[in-house]
Length: 213
Image 1: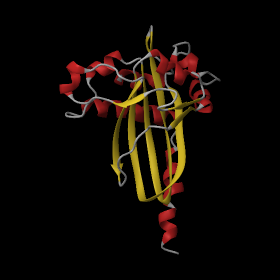
Image 2: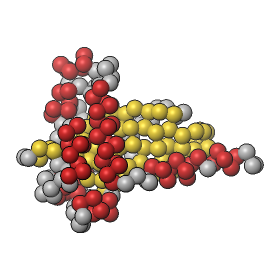
Image 3: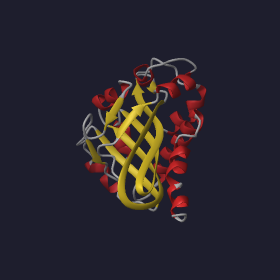
């Protein structure tokens, strides 16, 4: 049994690390994810998809487990407004399950919000269930997809994984607004709706993220 304990320790350590970052670190990391996804030569998000996006959710999710599995992640949602991109509204996800799996993996997600209904789902300040509250599809990739891009779902999901797991899907995932994180970052209680509709001025620390968009 002693050999199992260090492996089981992967789960709480990896998942606690997913929630340990400060709000500014999450914003800066989200900016880096956007830049990295734009730079992928064969698998980049088609520029037309980004040009027509009504919003984006950017997240890093850690999944870890040995027989029992768990996942935890955090990120931000931004939306287009009349004055450019909104400030970030903080979101998180988590869950647990059962399966024959071992190891830990970090997956970066860029979720493209293709229409106003998708933005409204994230503006409610509660939970959004992918595939139920908003329809989801794997997004087209690469320069060759540029001419044929037509939105077929409320959101497109793009992911890049590192580690020992594979085949991760966001179908059925629940993403929730982190109200306390929003309050800390904006210095006052502020709703996801006010942030994503441009009624809350983006803090100076969001400049790098907004420029990456």
